[in-house]
View 1 (tube, rainbow, N blue to C red):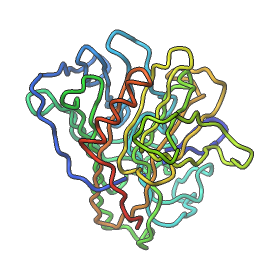
View 2 (cartoon, one colour; view 1 turned 180 degrees about the vertical axis):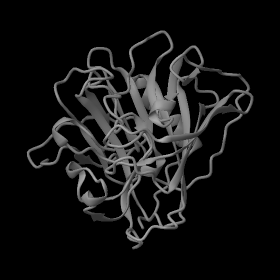
View 3 (cartoon, rainbow, N blue to C red; view 1 turned 120 degrees about the vertical axis):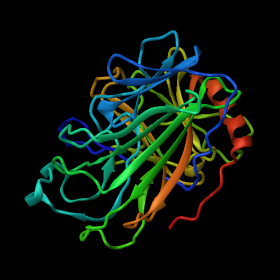
View 4 (spheres, rainbow, N blue to C red; view 1 turned 135 degrees about the horizontal axis):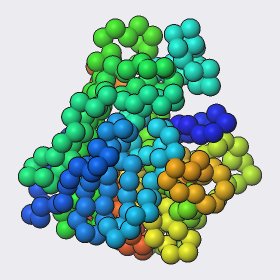
Length: 331
């Protein structure tokens, strides 16, 4: 998604699948927290969504830990939905932030650059308390208080038979009826999803070799002399990435079939240490090109995995067998 101190831009893409809600036999422990949060906790790992963050995923850790693995420094971090459409426009006369001008149509799940929160419409459990469902009307990132003409839907639940894996289904439902700016149908790069781990998880790893799915040696992502932008672009040949602690190799990974065959945004800003509310952060996001028209409805799935790096990769391989990565044509 975006923001950082001193006006540094962050990233933000997607795929087409209908939410296939898994019906695991075990009931998971889902409950409201004192801060208007819903928790998904099975005694192995736990995640939380919060009304103050548009229902974005703003907490993740092993169940026996209180150290959040997700950066929540501002409303452009978290693990969340954010989409782009149309050309970049200067709308400063209508309340656009000068730090984000010109800018395209860009609804963001948690809120905008001025810390205005998105509007929560549904915040509930479903399927006998095994699924968390959130629906919100997001803000446009660059605009003061402006509500986007779309809805975001998000479903979360544990993957059946994998106690440290959470399946997430995201969906955008556009209704830009009065939209007279972003009328062209060109595709734009989307994040599927945008992921911001804490800076403490400073080892960022992918597999980008020519022998995918054979447990070949992983790549530690570094910045090279030709990387001039805040994020680097790398092309994993296995569509997943993970940020782990250099000391313990424990961290958070994301498997995103929608990013298969494409470049991903990834990198970090700030010193190599930082926790949930600190400005330094890690980041990665699988990318794909989508057209978002005035009435587009698009959907995709991804999986969050928490644990040691070897276990994260092992789970990714299991998920790949169940949900093979399919290369989609860019639009």
